[in-house]
Image (cartoon, rainbow, N blue to C red; front, side, top):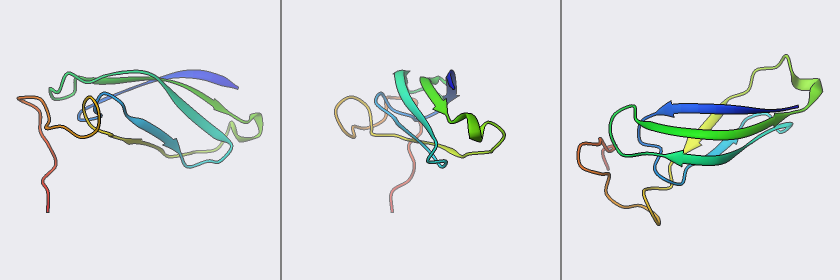
Length: 84
């Protein structure tokens, strides 16, 4: 069963990756916009799940791969996680 998902938040970057904890489910990024401000990032994704898993819960994880090609500094005004 396929469906569309919109994820909103902060710091996803311009080329995020999405993973799903259930091996019978998957999501693919259709497009992502992240101008760098707080709560301005949006990911539109196409997801699917097996008809046998419709009543299960799964964790969706968004991984930032940076802004542009690889990791660049966050745009002015955006917060970045501290480095250690």
